[in-house]
Amino acid sequence: MRIPNHIGIIPDGNRRWAVDQGMTKEKGYNKGLNPGLELFKLCEEVGIKEITYYGFTVDNTKRPKFQRLAFTKACIDAVNMLSKENADLLVLGNTESDMFPKALLPFALKRQRFGTGGIKVNFLVNYGWQWDLKDYFLEGENKSDLLSTIKSRDISRVDMIIRWGGRRRLSGFLPLQSVYSDFYIIDEYWPDFKSEHLYNALEWYNNQDITLGG
Amino acid sequence: MRIPNHIGIIPDGNRRWAVDQGMTKEKGYNKGLNPGLELFKLCEEVGIKEITYYGFTVDNTKRPKFQRLAFTKACIDAVNMLSKENADLLVLGNTESDMFPKALLPFALKRQRFGTGGIKVNFLVNYGWQWDLKDYFLEGENKSDLLSTIKSRDISRVDMIIRWGGRRRLSGFLPLQSVYSDFYIIDEYWPDFKSEHLYNALEWYNNQDITLGG
View: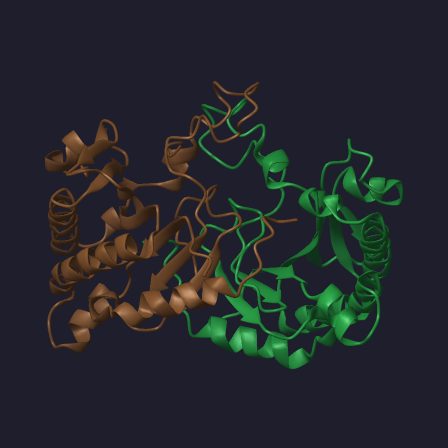
């Protein structure tokens, strides 16, 4: 079976899940923590080399304050959980804004090895696609690697993006690493994550031809 | 009904269609011409304001020569057909390469009005996402509009991308205009285009919430 090298995770639907359960919207984010850890462990097992989690974006911070505080806390907790695993971890986002949680600053300086290392884990926090691309070619016009000047240059091409919650869009997720990505959409909300979701996505990916635009 | 302002068309599956019909692969491209015109007329009827057709890419030109000649001819024919309609037409792609068909150079200088004008039609020919973004911020670092320096700056944000042929990926299609686009995938091949495909896509789009990342 052909396993993707790098998968992108868009864990959407936390708020809709909470509303369905009769809770207020911001209660949903906390329910995404265990799924995130479970997914990480499954990826370790099947031999995926790199995972990028879409935490929250600059766009998202315009939401009501209660929600913002809740998804920020969930991201802090998620990164702390992942730092107890064997992983090479990087938090990436605009650290110069007040919206970037101070607790995650130590993870954002450079990729760090936790445990024995292993999977590259990228966690996007206060990420913005415009922020990411701002220096594109400003310093790098003559560089042969077109991607070497973007802020996410330490994140490789994404082979498959899996999105929960039924929406079929990128919502600003790493535009340059996603140009050739295959998208797999799961209608269930992220807090309802099941291992079958990943297995089904991997099986589907195995049946795609990979042409990289050719 | 909420009609998208701008739709992107990825007319994939011409070669697979040809093979299914017992033809050689390159025979499929010509069968995409009438679908393209039919789609244009339907878009006029429903009030879509802008269409971008994914003709061929720099990546595609690495394919066998017979195929390259066939898809190049199909793009020339398609643009000629569309220029007999009421449309504001622009061909966009790397005109400095030999792969860009000379017959389409007059369409690539600037957007031109044909007939009484109307829908903006963008036709990507020898397009490459790296080519498109190459000047990003090189001249424009202090411009507030981040998109003003890309070569496709005259193409607006894409609301919905419809792809035929079952693949679920962008394949390099306008990365910056696509960051918030909704993707609608049709399993049938492009030469089997039916008006229902567009109607179903529009109905689906009408049921999406549009947040632009918020």
